[in-house]
Image (tube, rainbow, N blue to C red; front, side):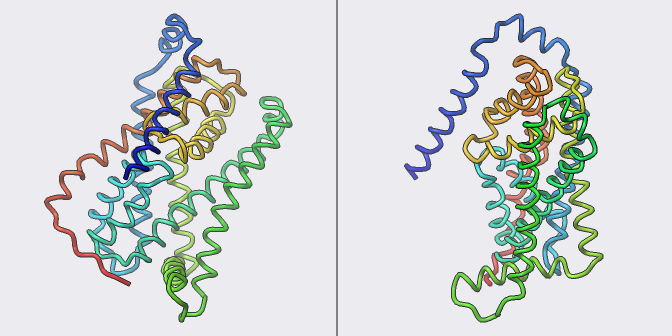
Length: 320
């Protein structure tokens, strides 16, 4: 417990140090000028689109559970709650909470819950990587003019890593699900988890459904963060890729810097948007809009269930 507190204190201190380093050279006039171009209408639209993306994420989670599925409303509720906790906990700790709640509140086997949460994440990573690859390929000549050949090469490596991680995760679930049924201890749990994941993707129609919904989820998520650019008063070439770059690097930064303190999005916004000719004040304005788009829909959808779920007794966790 003391170790966790020390880790949390270090994360908070690191976040504050990053924010101070980014903002220390800005004067009030520069900040005021950046905020003067902000648009509340675009910000509301961005948050609404992001909220729809969260709803699609929970629909995917429900569809990834084995039949007979728990009530959709209960899965949506705990999914929204876990999504809100992802804003507070580093390394997407809310996903671990989702697994625990699916078992405790809905009676889903731990392996099936793990497979569902993992499949949702892996497919989104794969689709996100493919999307970035397509955008880079379609606008190759324009990107070289905007970000330079060297930066484009680095971006392609990042895209390849994201896509590969997602595809590898789905493939591993499928391969392990074919393994021998009699395995010792932890290996049996791994095998059962993989088998539960494989059972979800048991037909071409199921694959198309899950991939299609993953595409919608990624589109709405990127749409929200892209609309955050005009919300911050910014206009950049090919805004989808600018927002995608910030999102991808912010996800990596979230492993060490909790998203709640905005240090990760601030640092990545400054780094990525500088390539598009945006100054530090404008990038930090976008980081503020990004933070609101990431947090407000998740809190609005997740916070009510902190209280409401107390009135609904858990179904009782089942063991494997």
